[in-house]
Amino acid sequence: GIQVEQSPPDLILQEGANSTLRCNFSDSVNNLQWFHQNPWGQLINLFYIPSGTKQNGRLSATTVATERYSLLYISSSQTTDSGVYFCAVERGGANSKLTFGKGITLSVRP
Amino acid sequence: ETGVTQTPRHLVMGMTNKKSLKCEQHLGHNAMYWYKQSAKKPLELMFVYNFKEQTENNSVPSRFSPECPNSSHLFLHLHTLQPEDSALYLCASSHNRGNGANVLTFGAGSRLTVL
Image (tube, rainbow over all chains, first blue to last red; front, side):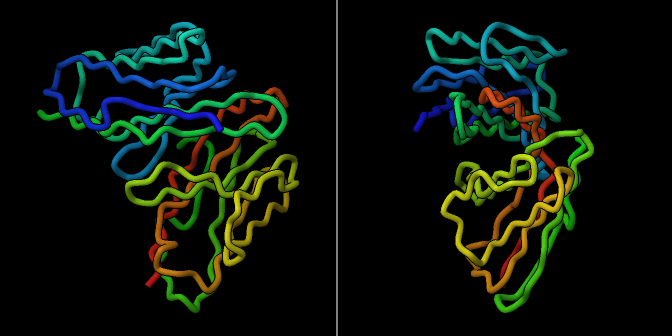
């Protein structure tokens, strides 16, 4: 099956700093999602971004499908950005399913 | 609130108990999912239902029994569980377009502890 690798595994930031989270995947995809899991376990869909660039406030994401990677940018980080960030991809076709990476644990300190 | 509601949020049960987890989605989606998230492990897909029909059973032990009475409701019936089944169980839904681009929306999860 498709492989998803996220880096770095852990990240500690001072409030106000910027960061880049990376997701590499091993095959072509027609679905890529970034999720944020807060400390209470809730997974929030940040972006659906199989290709191109999107922005939502302080967050933006870019997927370069031909090179099989996606980047999530967090600017002016806040303590509420802490949690685990997951990248998930799907190849498409019959019975395709979303495959998750192991996640990146982000801690933003005041 | 994401539009996917899970109850209960927390559950503690003994190995001989029978309990159920419930998931309800208010998004008009036609596909629903159960995922298991154990400590230090990636999310594991358990079951997928499309239009109330089970289309995926990811080699899940029979002590977990899903039920999908309609496209808005999904249950996970639990019986004779083991302590290693303790985990966060996440429900999700999506609009299955049939092209493999299933954009998932998750519930808040049910944290299960098996004693």
